Amino acid sequence: MKEVLIATKNKHKIKELSTVLLPLGFNIKSLYDYPQLPDIIEDQKTFKGNALKKAKTLSQLTNRPVIADDSGLQVKALNDAPGIYSSRFASKHATDKQNNNLLLKKLKNISNREARFITSICLYIPTKEPIYFTGILNGRIATNYKGENGFGYDPIFIEEGSNKHLAELTLQEKTQISHRAKATQKLISYLKTL
Ligand code: ITT
Image (cartoon, rainbow, N blue to C red; front, side, top):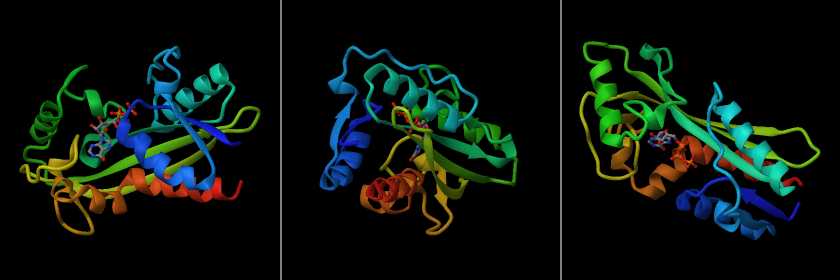
């Protein structure tokens, strides 16, 4: 398994994974190398289901090993919403600000602010069973915005360990603790054993 396709056009994700997989001897491809591939609709009920759908479909189309992920925010008082709808919580093409505002509105007067970010990665190697790697970042939803870094819900998410809003962390600091980084580390440990 020398060539692996990362199922994303997110340049940050491609860079992050390439940096760690290149030294292990992997030839990294992304969706930019396969412009003919269709967009895969994320319509499954779970992060894991969406990651599997992307990885399996693209692996079958390319006959290559594929790494795909899906992430989002779960808020306890909202029965784990926005969950798989995190990027389109307020509407289909919502901005981060619109999603954050809606979340703060829904949590107005609610004292349980517990929340967590989850990433599910699926590694799909042709003819083998899919393998999953999960990363979780626990915290709570703030009542105000703070910080300029990051994206998505970072300005209103307070990380359990540091008590800082995620948007106050540098990219380097966030990369050491994030759900995505934790799942990626597990993937890397597995790939090293191949
Ligand atoms: P792909 O194109 O690779 O699918 P995406 O932008 O859909 O990337 P994710 O699946 O990783 O991104 O995450 C879905 C949404 O969950 C994202 O748009 C954010 O609203 C939220 N989210 C995920 N990770 C986050 C993080 O580290 N900080 C803040 N919000 C995050």
